[in-house]
Length: 287
Image 1: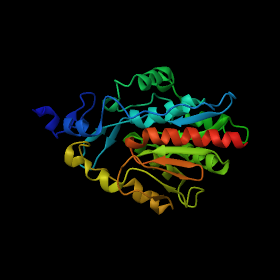
Image 2: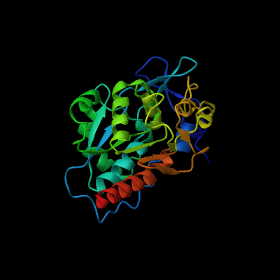
Image 3: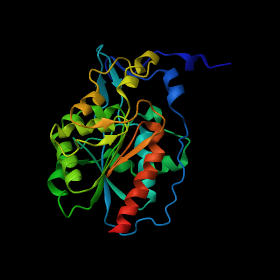
């Protein structure tokens, strides 16, 4: 017999904020799991040099206003954040975690794979950094340039990436520096919305990526994943600045265009992590 609660498509009220909602029980039963597909994180040629780091830009705002006045209680998706980080960690890279404000990274804890020991251990390892991240503006002022220790930038997914990052001058500075300095840019699902920060006539024009399709975003309110529709389409806006999303659905696909590495959804978290770790290790080996 099926669990009646798991058939409920009504979004669940978030008591911490007025008119805010978590995803419905039904949508969570369909799109989240207590265990992820983490695998193949063995890197015998792991980086041991101690210099190269990954700059992580997390979401610092939880509430996303939708078209009907309700708010979606969101943040960064744990699988989209932690699985790529797990592979990069195992490959020998450390992280500097940042947010726009320097306030804590917000997570969609309802999607945390709590029975995944390895993932939960990684979360615990970086918990203090997630709670007390660097302020991105400070990194822009002090840690970018030709002698920077960052080999790449990682922008996790989750609808929280739609809030603030697409309009941020600091995000723009980081992305332009990464592209012009031949650094890696890693992102998935809704994370590429941050690419909008560069605006038109940018070094990202002409890139192809995987990301969460606008058409699928439009379907999620029907199952209660979001309490309303998004007020704008990030894929459509990316196209306007010359960035093409190559996927029409979500299957766990990844895509590499030069040093831009992207994935389509939480289903791509493990594959994107493997792609990023192996590709960066290969690039270091050639230097």
